[in-house]
Amino acid sequence: MKTFKKSALILFMALTLGLASFVAQAAEQASPGEIISHIEKALIEIKNSDFSAAQVQLKSARFASDTLSGDAAKRAHAALIQGQIQAKKGDINKATDELNQAIVLFKSL
Image (cartoon, rainbow, N blue to C red):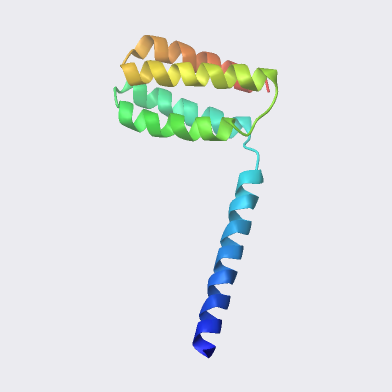
């Protein structure tokens, strides 16, 4: 019975600490510089026609940009999404244009 109580206590504490860590991480707001860094890395990968590596960087940028609020942030996020869509299609020129527009908008934040 003692081992059951100890196990339950350890499990409860692990879940509590894990949840607290998750909430603290979710509360962090990404900086526009971090997002721009991901987009620039994605642009390099797109120019090298490595679309799978670009998608990883664009997903990171999208996740980080979700934490920003405001009208300009929404426009920048929309441009980022359009750039990701064009990159998935393999259209290097349109993806580059959209992502450059997203960088300009994120720099204005």
